[in-house]
Amino acid sequence: MSTSPSAIKVLVVLVLTLVVLCVAVAIPIGVFGLLVKLFGHG
Picture 1 (cartoon, one colour):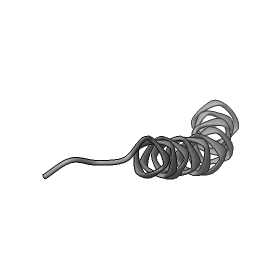
Picture 2: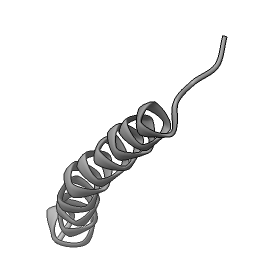
Picture 3: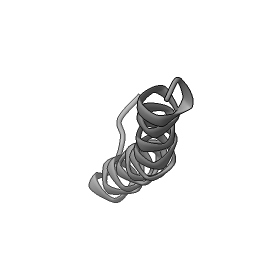
């Protein structure tokens, strides 16, 4: 089973998109969690 270069490109783009989405979701959640930890007990 041979994969064409275009298919590999599509796969890489999909993986990068997933990673970017995960980072874009994780950063605000992490910052919000830290803020809650810092100011929630004050």
